[in-house]
Length: 145
Image (cartoon, rainbow, N blue to C red; front, top):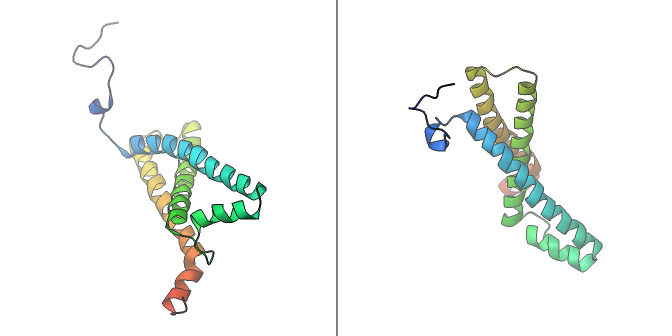
């Protein structure tokens, strides 16, 4: 078999035209690792704090919440970040499930579903956090906070 001399032997990212399908492929790996490591460590820390007594649990919760029990900036970053990672990983997993059936490999369809994964994860994260924070937002706008 002859090789085309104008093509590199081992193409790398500089030779590929970036597209949404490459973005969601990389995001799928990153969010999976992030959910496993960050989410796993937070969950293990929460369990360890809960098992270590009331003072340990209060100390752990102080990292993520303010005195009133509302979420602080650190808790919001972890919470919103893990929520976005979850939805990104979920929607891309569903996209891969469809691809595993043999459908969706057409360039236009693959591009459209890749963009839908990114946009859908952002919208789902915003909707969930809007719903979670709605009571606090209503209280603030009414001047009760």
